[in-house]
Length: 115
Image (cartoon, rainbow, N blue to C red; front, side, top):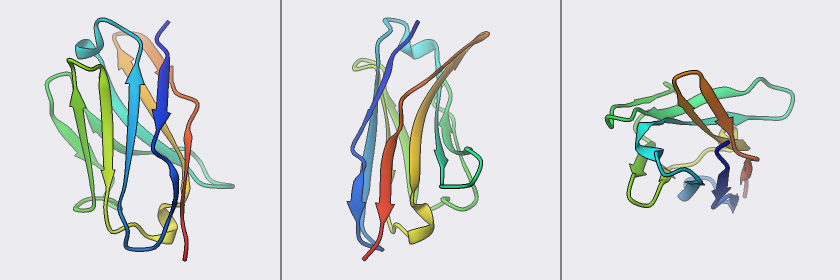
């Protein structure tokens, strides 16, 4: 069982930055593909960004050029740097870890973009 603990959510004005972090409780963090999802009220959970065990990244079209995912295998953390935030980025953001047949979710952290 891997525990994922997200942090860094909060209220931010449109156009502002915010950085999310996710700490994983596993000594083999480097094996895992890591992802950030988000879920807005009344909507489905969708993939925002991913980073493979090898460091390859991918992004949803809606966040390309604004968000950056990164990982620190020594610290067992994955981060999501979010810039130029928009009101439509408001959602609960979830960290997800996947390796082989295993899949783990964090509890989520609220991000609200509003003036």
